[in-house]
Length: 374
Image (cartoon, rainbow, N blue to C red; front, side, top):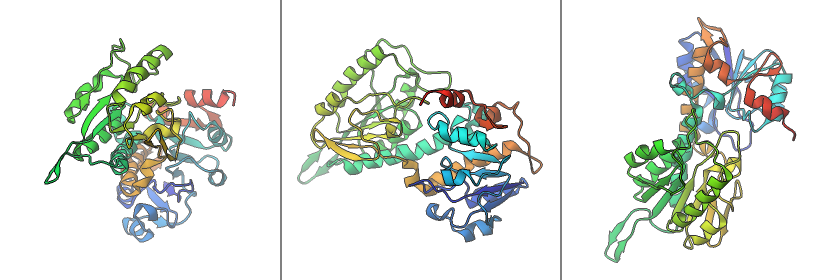
C-alpha cells in the first residue's frame, strides 16, 4: 500500500500531512510513503530527511491514499484518481462545493475534523492538536499587541501591575491560551457556558467567571458547547460586556461546529475597555466572537486593537505538522491490515469520519450542508 503526500497549495498553508518520524512509523506497518518534492520544507523537513526516513520523493497524488492538511484546491481535485482515498481537513459543513466535487470524482474521503470524539480516537483528534497550537499563539499575540507588560514587575521606578486577561471558551485552544498567558505572568480569568470546565480552568491558575444566566450547563454529548437560545445569548453578552470592560486583553475561542461563531464581545463591550487594550479573536474563521472583528485583519476600534488571525496553526508549521502527522498516522493504522488498505465501515471511527464514498455524500451533516440552498 502506498500513501502520497502532496505539497499544500492552499494560500498560507505551511504544514505538511506527514513528517519523517511518521514515515518511519508507517514503514513498520508495511506502508510505503511518497512525498512530493518540497512538501515539508516550510515545516522544517527537506526531501533528504524524508528519504533518510524511508520515503520516496515523487508524485504527491499517485498513492492508494492521499494525505493532506487543507481541503483540496480546484487544481488538486483534478489530480485525485477515482477510487482513491483522501484524508485531510475538508471543512465538510462549511464547504459543500468541495464535498460535492469529491463525491462526483468518486473519491472516498475522510475529514479529520469529523472523527468522533471518543476515547479510542483521541490519538486521531486533529482538531485538538491544532487548537493547542492556535491557543498558544493567541496568548503570544495578546502579549505582543498589548502596549503593557503581562507580568507584575517591581522596579526602581516603581511597581507595574500585571495585565488582566480574559479567555472566552475553555476548549483545547482556550485552555492553552490560559496556560500561556499565565506563564507570561498575567492575571487570567476565563468564561465558558459548560460548568464541567470550571475545575480545568482553576487547575491552570485562572479564575472561573460565573455569570448569573440561569444556566445549569450547556454541554453537548460530544463535549462541545451547545448553541444558546437568542435570549440566553443576549443575557450573556450584556453580562460579559461588564466583565470585558475590566480587562486589558481578551482572547476569544468560542465556536460551535457547523455554525457561525457565537457573538460574545459586542461593540459596547469594546467601548468599555481601556484605550490600548487588545482582543484576539480565534473564532475569525467562522465569523468571529467579536462584533467588530474583520477576519484576517488587525484593526483598531474605539482605541482597542482587534486581531483576527486566520490559520494560526500554520504559523507554527514545525510542531503543528508533527502533531497532525501523528493524528493521520493513527488513523492510517486503523485503516490498514497487514500492509493492505482495509476500510471497515462497521468501525465507528472510520464510518464517522467518512464524508464521501461510492460517488455519494455519506456524512449526514455534510449531506445537509450540500443540499441546503446557497
